[in-house]
Image 1 (cartoon, helix red, strand yellow):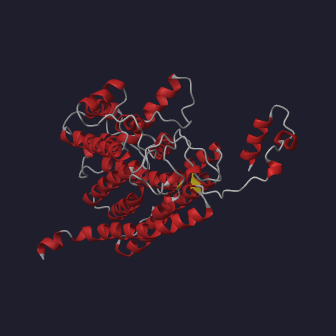
Image 2 (cartoon, rainbow, N blue to C red):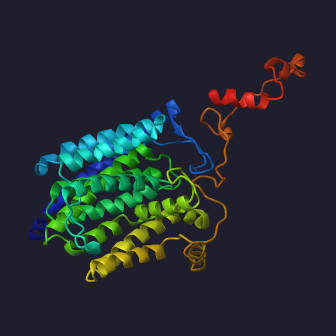
Length: 426
């Protein structure tokens, strides 16, 4: 009984994680059925969307609903949380903007505006912002007029960085689980139970989602999910920084900025790398592409699962590296962690070749994208692959065998372009 009593504080977050998991695994089959009936499928383009066949991309609906419902249930056993209304307001804004982006298209400026307004609720209304660097680069406390805009910028970076790693099966969900579990454990140690419960609930929802998103994925989280998950992670990370730096008794008090960087190492490093590469090439850093770290790894592994597991391990190793050398001066630890991350991730061809030579990956030039290994260049009709279309075999009437199609369409040499335009408009 004494053993059980010592760990009773874990019952609430663990129960929340289990409930969130169960809600997601029950909700996703229903969502998939509705999406298939309405044909709201994500179409492969052979470029960034490299899956074989049209797949639902609204898994974020289940994640969002699970988090809200579960936290409302678990609030009975948690303390009052003044931040909660502001967090829910921001989540709803990002959820509906992501939903519109998944179903239709949302203007980039409107999307950015929403990504600024949502965290503004948490930062200004909830008082969650980064007011200190803890001595990193010799910077300690920040004035409010710098802290608030800087924190808003950090929110936008984290949300978009998480969104960008959602490029292969299982990666975004798995990285989210690692981050959420670490945050949940940290908040339990810091005696901040509402934050811990939210982190564990998010982990449970993502574990349930991974059942359907692991290779071969049958559903994607889409912007609906990545924006919501990224926002929760950003909120909890900023709160961890704010609390950890202000409380000398908090876990990792002296190295909080580097802990936060290590926790988000994969999405942040990938985003920074892609931004620099595209600017050097004279391209817009905001366009989609296949130059992300996970795409580079996929090129030598040919397997979404292997690629995702390698990046999970890299994220955990970076965290363990920081914890192992926590006694080093903060700025030195920051630079060493950056170098260690660079060493682990395949940002150059020589490192990718080394991974193959070490046997970590077996070179597979065929990009196994979750189904049958085709290259993803698929032409589609009404959202379905031609391989799946079963058309009736009509007999052509004799009088139509020599039918003058050009006479009917008025083709004057540009008929092919006009025909393509009509199909595109449909």
